[in-house]
Length: 270
Image 1 (cartoon, rainbow, N blue to C red):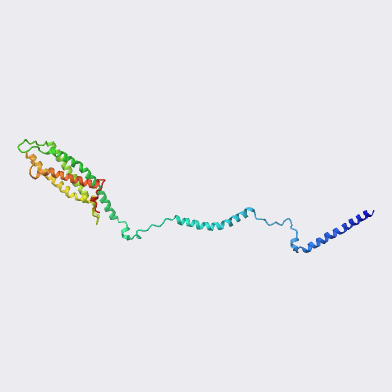
Image 2 (tube, rainbow, N blue to C red):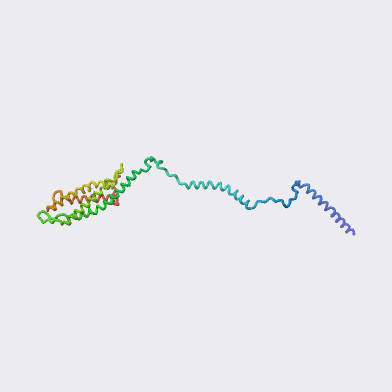
């Protein structure tokens, strides 16, 4: 019985003391907590809206923008440097090189003169090559138009056909030669420019084949008259063939001087 009575006392003490302890702890906790404003304790109605939290996409955009802001400031100078490197260097002007403006401006009159000179010299070159064809043919037919035989022997006179053919070739050669010379003599001259090298040799040979083309036809006419008179070619007319050979040789050398692919150095004035 004694033991049951002690158990009852312990249970009674627990029932009485535990509520008191819990109330005391609650009062101590309330005393230690900070004061809360009265407005904070007002319950929110259903109509009040809660403050919307920022969406994750907005935060990510802001984060990316803030992350790219420093990078963009660094990328702009690098792009500027690349553009500066791609810009080509400015070439110096003719004025920087010492040429005055009057020398760098186009001269229409000078250009027209150069065009005319170029055209006439091209015609001169073309006709000069064509003239060489009847000239060679005239040299080939020359012996056939010459009387054969020595004094005291029977002289064989050339046939009229051979003689006429040779005279026709000689006249054609003379006409084409002076036509060719016309385009050279009357081509506009550039002031202050002197011929050099092969061009100079070409010009110097004109003093040989030019007089030869005048003298050869004259001697040919004298020889033709002597042939028609039944005489053997004599006197100055007998040099007709020699004058023709020298003229043809000088004319061929003048063509080679400006047309030959090999330029001999002793022609060039160092």
